[in-house]
Length: 249
Picture 1 (cartoon, one colour):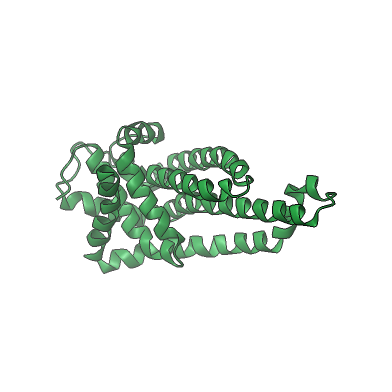
Picture 2 (cartoon, helix red, strand yellow):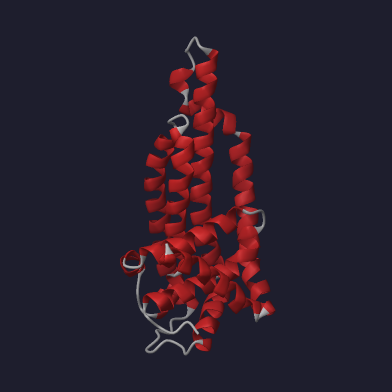
């Protein structure tokens, strides 16, 4: 638990780091605003057709004689679908926002590293050259999240138990993938790819989970994704330095 809360603390340190440069905060918020507009449109579609989606997912219960059990199944299924949608949204939102704002977030991450002594042997790749690689890695991460979200959806269909365990597992899974996504820029600076991120974060799982879950919970707050994104990038840079045993002060 001490390591877990050390990960939570990294997000707070990221907030303090970007707080010293208000201009970078504003620049870092612009891509998040664009992503919010995009996902607002997607959620509008989901809400519009939400009833149809639930009806399609509970087709087997439409002919049940008991209205109570039919309604119960529909409510539980609706909650499970909403939970999976939130999980996928937060991970894909982070991936898309990082892609849109790559030059801005690269600057934030570099600023944090330079203040702490830099990165020996850093790989300096222009963002337009690293963009295709980032897109491929982000797509792989979102698809992996989708594969894990399916069992969570099935778990959420279990009355009572699913509504208790499902959100806890969803927060842990979402936090993990957010951590993997947010260390992308500093890992690229070290010449490393997605498989390296996953491997090295697994060796520091409690810290990575603490950081990722903290970001996950902040993103659930209205406007949290916009306000916290620059700090999350800075925190991901600090998490990377911790994983590599580099100074944090």
